[in-house]
Each structure stands twice: as structure tokens, then as C-alpha cells.
Length: 480
Ligand SMILES: [Zn+2]
Image 1 (cartoon, rainbow, N blue to C red):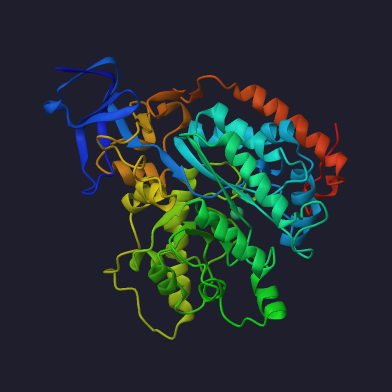
Image 2 (spheres, helix red, strand yellow):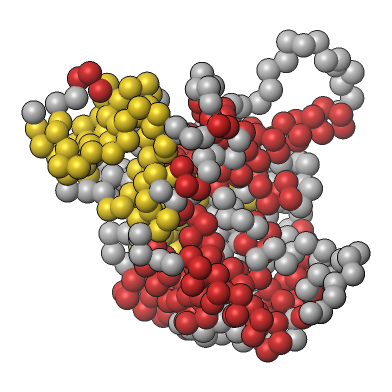
């Protein structure tokens, strides 16, 4: 027998190239790395510590490929507001008023949502730099949680898209990115430069930011098409084509680009993305919440585009639960498919032989190895394979009525919105335990809630955003 630090046992969903799943399997962890995976009957490891066993499920840590954690302080406030009302009314003002300490407090509840539900890696796009160290507050909160983070520092300069104070000179933005990179990069955190979308700075600046990512071997993370692209691309730049076509025309669209949303494309743009090797951060839950029935991931997946699944910011992503987004990925696609069918001239009738798009297994794949590939981290994480880092989620399904009986284990996990929080027996990043039985090992969630509640109260008055609270609510709210 070989000795290892931790031996995990249960049904092991490995996400290796063959998608091997061991109904009675093991994962051996030593020195933070995976040193053995296989059937329990062939296990040659003895753990200094053992966990799991009958009734447990072992999966790779989940990967969230899109977010804006600083939005914790405006969580859910999108409901009942228009895009412009929220962007300029409270989104920019409240997040912009967050200095380092406030950003830490604001980001902590969504971070705890993520990690307590099994997310071990998150991508983040930060663009509220009135306080230059706001981004440091978010990074500090992620560090304290133990999660990995691919942080993008977004530079904004367009006067119509970004209010006073949010705009930066390119030199200043890139110098700050260098500072953040030098201060924060380590084995668990990487920092890159980007911008929100192609109309948030000048074309030359856009290209310079992208060039910085090429020179630094980092991803270029962009919302495309972003909400204002349609308005400004044509109006200002005389560009009739799509956002991806524009990027390709400028020589930018390539394998280091990861585009968030990527919906409502021009015909042929999905193939263009595929040919250029760009990655896509699908954000199905947010699209669904906003009623965007045109959601379509199929065109990417069929063309072999590398896709992951992300949540977006808490203002529209509510509880930061990636499991909900996995269910949303399937539902949004199926509603989209039905919508497209109804909008076409086809008079196809339901025959009972139709296969719906996708499967729960596909969703879980996108949340693990897919997300790891989308963030160019699949050499380290995304699957349970010997040599990779031990980023692992252990689920105890012995009390999980919604996961019983187990024949359809993965469908029940995905359509049932994942395990209950306290059934998340353990979450590990590189072999270090971050969460045990649903609770973070060092962060106090009651304290996080108290501080975040107080921060929101302060911000609502400070930036005069209280008018957006319960805006258009038909309820009678009594103060006191
Ligand atoms: Zn976003």
C-alpha cells in the first residue's frame, strides 16, 4: 500500500478524456495533487485521512467563467428596473463608492455562495476603479475564501458608456493592471487587462489592451456583443457587421479571447469564432432571467468552440449558484430551440421521437473541464486525473432525498439545482479543505451578511440610490 494525505471514496465522476465515472471509486491526494484515481477494488492507497465512502459523490471543483463580484452590494436590485436605470442609477454609483474595505465586504457574500456550493475557480471582471484599490478588496476576499481567481481589470474610457470617475487614461489603466498583477499573482490568482465591450473605449485603445494581453500571455475577456454595441458600432464607426466580425476585422479575434454572453450574433459569426479559436463564457441563467429566448449555445458546441458556464454579477445573477446556471443552460437552450422552431416556416409536428438538446452530463462537463479549458487552466484543474491539482468537491448524498434513488444521479444533481449546502461535505483547492459540511472553514457567513447588509444601507443613502429599492413594487411596504 502507498501512503497519501487524503483518500476520498464514493462515486467518482472523473471528467477525464473518456469521462470515466467509477460507481465505487477513489481519489488519492498527496501534497495537494491527485496521485491516484480508479475503482475502489483496485485502490493501492492508504490515506492518512479518509473521507467519503458509501453514498458519496466525488466531482472536480466547479468553474465559474464569468462574474463581477463587487456587485454583491446591489444583489438582485435589477428586478423592476431597466438596463439604463440600473447601470447609471445605482450600479455604477454604488459599486463605484466601494473602496478596498467596502469591496471586500461587498464581494464576500457571493464568494461564499460560490465556494460553499462547490465552485473552486472563479473568473471576475472588475471595472469600478474610482477607488483604485477596490479591485484589491475583491482579490483579498477571494484569497481569504481559498478559491482560485482569473481576475480581469477592465479599462473604460468612453464618455457615453462610463460616467465621470470611471474613465481612465489607457496608460493609467495599464499601469494599475501591472501593479495588481505584481501584487496579487500567484499559483491561485492571475490578473489580466480587458475592457467591458468594444464600445467602452476607442478602437485604438481596444487594440492596445488586447496587445497587452498578447504580450503578457493572458486572456482578453470581453462582453460581446455588449448591450450598447448595436447602438454605437453602426452610429459611430459605420460598422454594419457584428461585434465578432469587427474584432476579426481588427485582427483581434483569436485563441486568447474569451467572450461573455455571445448571443444574438450575425449569421456566420459562430463559425468565425470557431475558426479563430476564441472561447465563450455562456451566461444562461442571466439570459433566462432577462427573458432572452434566443439563447443559443448549440451553434458553438456543434462547431467545437470551447465553452464554459458563468453567472455574471449578483445584480442580475441573484444567489450565486452555479448549479442553477447548469439547469438554466439546458432549459434556456430548449426554450430557444422551440422559439426558433416557432419563428421558422417549418410546420413540423411533435412526433414523440424528438430528442431535446443536451443532457445533465453535458452541463456538468461544461461546469468542470469545460470551464477549465475556457480559462486555459485545464493543465491544472477541471478533472480528477493523476498529476492535476486536487480541486475536488465531495457530496454526501445519504440524507439527500432529492438525489434518491441514484439511477439518474447526474440528472437529479443538475435539474434539482445541485446538492443542498450542508450535503457539500468538502470543497478542496489543491488538497486544502475550504468547506466542510457546507460551512467555510475560516470565514463566518453571519458576519459577512451583517457587514454586507450594513454596507448596502450606507451606500443607498450616500449615492442617493434608495429610489431604486423596490422600484415598481406593487406591495405596500411599511417602514417599521
Ligand atoms: Zn458581465
